Image (cartoon, rainbow, N blue to C red; front, side, top):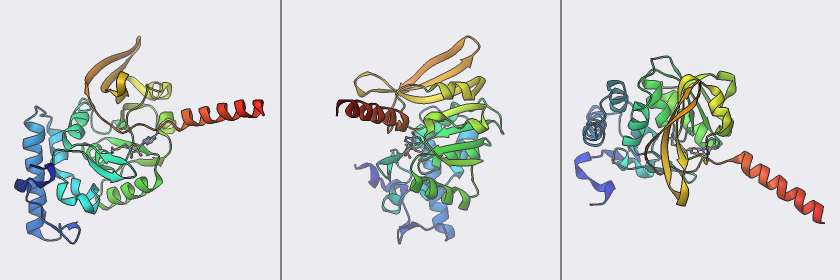
Length: 254
Ligand code: SAH
């Protein structure tokens, strides 16, 4: 069966909106979320109550473009426009569970706000969330959704996440939801001792690995978690450096 057509999810989408205005339809979104949590998340072994509660309560459909609304709770990533995706629910829960050892109020920096859904789950878990997005339109839309739902992060910044967000450092955790080529030095500097960097990293042959790094006095402890597929963390600085190096080369030749 095509992933988007699972009748058990029973989507109640009308006029391009998941009609949360009526009680029955609000129930249907809640039911879809409960199924999502049981069948996609608990069934695969996640059990942290703070994560499960957040996944049960944050209305994922509010972060999905209207054309894909009926697929909001399926077991898959979805397009959010601009060539970007909102992660599969399980991946959001899995990454969130990696941070469950940190107490409420801990500072978390997210790189790649996208739709704002991962940020919303982290806010719901009680973290002080700072998040960064390079595409202005996605940042504006995420901010509007998060504010409307009362899940505003402490800051949402439009900038290249490679540099981190030094003014709020140090963070207990830095979580990237786009795939970096390597871990920037800035992230290591901005995470506190015993803090965690959780990020998909590019490996050979186009493969990606989700890694969890813990900052120790002797350096970083790195643990490979699982193979993943994320959109790239666009390196504007690398591209800029390359462009200016090429420019210098061409000028020298002319
Ligand atoms: N966490 C998001 C999914 C993010 S998809 C969610 O829950 O919906 C990855 C996001 O990273 C995209 O929105 C993309 O524009 C953004 N991104 C890519 N490179 C970036 C960079 N260098 N700095 C900040 N954001 C970046």
